[in-house]
Length: 121
Length: 108
Image 1 (cartoon, one colour):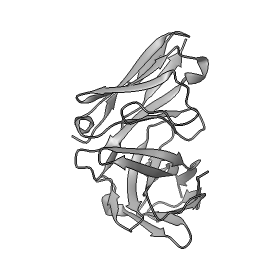
Image 2 (cartoon, helix red, strand yellow; image 1 turned 90 degrees about the horizontal axis):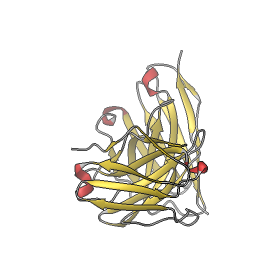
Image 3 (cartoon, one colour; image 1 turned 135 degrees about the vertical axis):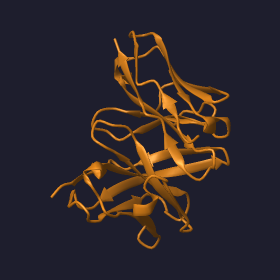
Image 4 (cartoon, helix red, strand yellow; image 1 turned 90 degrees about the vertical axis):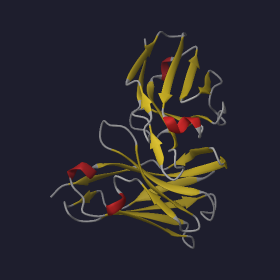
C-alpha cells in the first residue's frame, strides 16, 4: 500500500520560506507525477505544482514565481519550498501521487493526510 | 480557460439520486476525476476516467461526461455520502492541474 507523509514546520513567519517534505513508502518515487496541493481553512483545493520523477516540474501560474519543487529519489522524497509567504499562504498542505493512464487521463490516487502550515509572526 | 466550475452546494433526500456537475473547456480534452472530502480528512478518489471506481468505492457512485461537462452521480445517496466533492483535470495545455471550487453535498 502506497503511503505519503508530509513533514515540516507548522508555523512560518511572514516573508520567510515555507519548506515541506513528502516521504513516499510502499512504492518507488521513480515513476509518476508528484504534486503539492493546498487548502486554506474552510476553502477549496488549490494545485501548487508537480514534479515528474525525472525532475521536470510544472507550477501553478499564480504561484510560479515563489515555488520550487524538488525530488530526492534516493530517499523516496519530494519537497516544496514556497518563498516570501504571507497570511494568505496559511493552509493545509497535501502531497499526492498523480497517476497517468493515458494522455487524457490523470488522477490523484494517493494522498498524504495533510499538514497545517500557519503563517504568523 | 483553465477553470472548472461546480455548483457550491447541492442537497438530496436520503435514498434519492443526485448529480454533481463540473464544467470547463479542458474537459473536452481530459477526463475529470472526482474526490470526496469529509471534514478533517484528506480527499479520496471516487471516480476517474470515463466511469471508473477505485477499489472500495461503492457502486452507487458513477461518472459521465459530455462536451465540456463532467458529472458525478450518486444513485441512492446515503447519509455517509454527505461531504464536499471536487472535480479535477489537467488544464487545456496539459501542463497544469485545476480543481473545481467544490460542491457541498447535504443528505436530507
